Length: 294
Image (cartoon, rainbow, N blue to C red; front, side):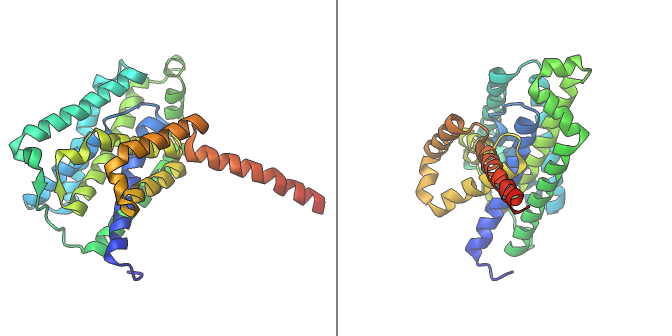
């Protein structure tokens, strides 16, 4: 397809999965203002569920849906447990959910324990078609995020993210909308996890640990919390960096931590804010030139 080699196909598949999982967290943290430090757990639930389903002989589509549903159920449980907490306490609660997931899959022999699950079946599409399907899911996630941001539900999420107390005074059922955001975000994370498992074809608890949660969060923060295109851009760059510079994989926390420090210090709005500043600086010049011509 388009003369792509095996390496390029692998990179594009990785990018598609990264975009989907980053936007799934953006729905929860960016749109609805709920900080999650355990998002890799929902990603992992989708991966483990889909891997077990296809190994048992079920079709890939059924495995993806099952992973999304199970991830959503776990997300709703965490969401319900987090309704009364916010900010730092919410971050700690979600981080605890992530460690709980790692503890379960790391000790449970049914899902391979610390050894993980190997030999995840090839779904039979071929690498090129699988890449195209992954990019299609990522594209649909982008379109859905853009639509949601401009929908009435997106405005409700904005209100909850801006000030929960004020939103409650205005008559919004804050708890319900926080759960809706958790359900939507974790379902998408489950889908991304199912694709990841069948792309790598081996998963273990380390694939969905705290470092992975920080990696996903870094894509959202560096891209610009709540910005769809900023998060997409950051997901593409941050997922490709370890592929181009393999030494980064060993120092991922150091690199991502440094990038987070620089972004939060100089541009808290991330790449989206930088792009907006550049655009606003360009526009007056263009306008003045047009006035001069007139």
